[in-house]
Image 1 (cartoon, protein in one colour):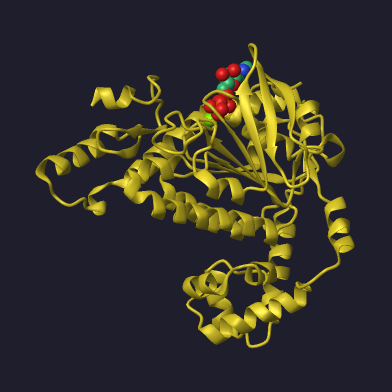
Image 2: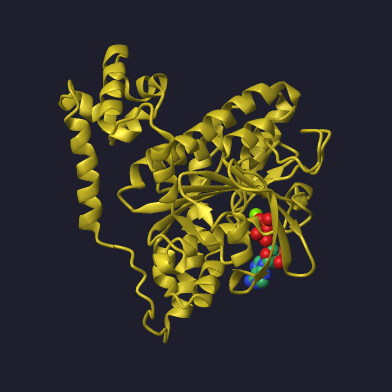
Length: 417
Ligand code: ADP
Ligand code: MG
């Protein structure tokens, strides 16, 4: 048992943090290790079928959350004492009323589609299809499955939504007009921004991949802070959604980074919507749920750190490769669709490089997840270590950017040149 706990990179696992247990081949969350591990170990010994109900996921989840919350509260109390009032107006509209209005506008547009009565509307909204875009860009099979609507209705709704949104052939200059208006979030490093064409762009899925400690998680934290900045400072005056699959989100780092930018860290923390994904199904579900809150909460950045981790630990062995790739593929398309539905949203994901090339894909510098991830994300950035706090980022695969390298550093105040 103790062996299993230490197995993850030989380092200690913190409370609430997830780790992969090679003994029972599951991801555990520290907090209830012994209980759930023994359940699985016992089942394995007696050769009984795995009964998912026996796995007390719910309690474990609650405990981990409570712990995290406690940690955050302690931090806030400690730092609360004589904190100077915010210097910079962050420009984020915290007005709940406005959120409500923009949500209602979307729903009203759906309501006005031909053939949408009260019952259909309810089904659509329940399944998260609360805007014309969400209907127009989702494959009919998914709409049918999730809303329970029939073939004909679904087809009609998609067609009507597409017509209203003017989706069809466009001239390239219309696309150029659109691309000229793409917004970007600064990474904190001028050099890194430059090789990305001015920062992390909206309307795309951007993947940062690299080995352990190359700064993937640090960049994710920094982007969540920077997206909140006023436009002239490289932000989008919007909130971030952080999906943490590895238990490595640290509010402490957000506080340090906020202070580096003279921001009131309490506001910055409030403007990050956080979701801990405990397994791959949960991760997929969180992204589906995100669709409902993006507009309402003015979210313009979604972070998934890391994209493939859970899939890797849950689908073990060559035999599961096909179904794993299938699930990852669907998940990635959910992400790409979010970018279609919300063109001013940027989705940024991290990916590990496989340490055991023989187990996954030939080249040790290939990100895990294989070709599916490579083709699903629009911009890919490979990270590696330089001297000391320096890191090197290389844009390896972008439809419009040259392959170029940037050197940046990770400091106490975050990402910089
Ligand atoms: P990964 O690519 O595995 O996600 P991280 O983003 O967690 O890597 O980067 C870890 C690195 O970030 C550490 O090795 C350290 O160099 C740097 N780092 C983390 N916290 C701080 C800090 N408070 N001050 C300076 N550097 C830090
Ligand atoms: Mg990390």
